[in-house]
Amino acid sequence: MFLGGSSTYRPYDDAVLDGVDLDIESGEHAGYPAFINQLRSYFEKASKQYLISTAPQCVYPDANLGSTLSSKVWIDNNYVQFYNNPCNLANIDNKWNFDYASWDALAKSNPNINSKVYVGLPAGTGAAGNGYLDLPTVQSDLSYLYNSYPSTFGGIMLWDASWYSNNQDYVKSLSNWVKSNMKCGSTPPPTTSTGGYTTTSTPSSTDHNTSTTLYSTATSSPPPTYATSNS
Image 1 (cartoon, rainbow, N blue to C red):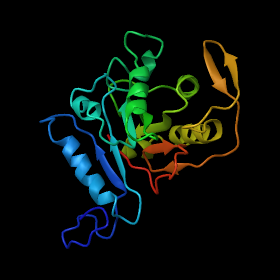
Image 2: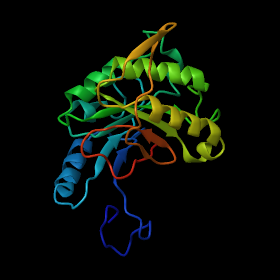
Image 3: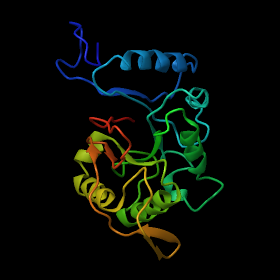
Image 4: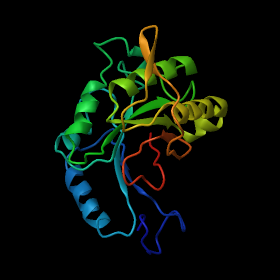
């Protein structure tokens, strides 16, 4: 119905979705692996690529999606919400709170060898209870993660479109910086040391798939037609 079907009950008129994102924050946890597997059985017969993604909280394992992710079902992208929790990106230097390594290991253990982790961040000061950072700090933190986890780092996700509309200079600057400095999902470019972090030199331009809330430079094959947004 929503992924290119012809039902008369389509809520988005002639718009066609490019995948399904699981942003599960309450309710029962059972059934999602079967749901994903059924979706994939449909996707395999489709004429275009569809994505299956999740939007877990950064606390590992996620309280609502942990059992689904540990079941080893196929996941293309994990848009991990590194905000609204003690594990938000602002605590990257606190090993007792911030934990990216577990998400990196999860992506590597997925049956999809191109499964990626995206760093979810607030798009504005009021978009989340915590986790919004100034551009220089975000750039420094992302450079560190990109160089530390090059095979699974997929890009960034920003919540949400309404906050983007009110904070466009910030979002555009961050998006342009990611495009110029990162080629995610591959070996990072040469690095230079600045203070406590390692930063990248500027490589040539890369593939860039965007929506109002997601910025990605992932180069896995084949790339998504459009990026998906989530909360």
